[in-house]
Image (cartoon, rainbow, N blue to C red; front, top):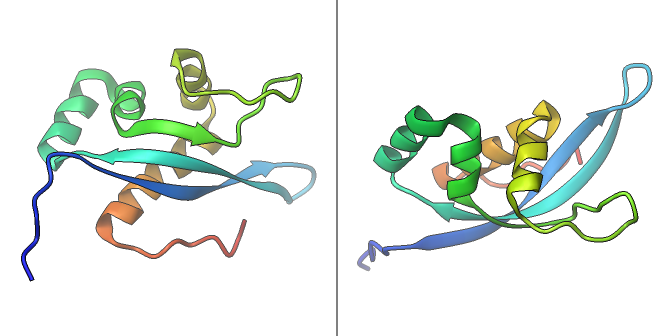
Length: 112
């Protein structure tokens, strides 16, 4: 069987979010992200050129599960990307999920 080297590949993954809450506990939630797989050379150039924000703008194509203060869904835009980049508890799992799935790791959601 031959592998087709596609120009563009996307995938969706559930991302577990652990928000610190109270004494030694976490509020565990999940969001769904749609990612674009990019070559490592493009990832390295993106990191060098613009850091985390540039990476998210490149690899993150859509999100499900974010709500505003009124309970309305938030869609992926610069404001949401800025909010994600400003919160380590969001940024790290979103980027780690991308890398783990691109490596072929199975989803690890037992803690969500």
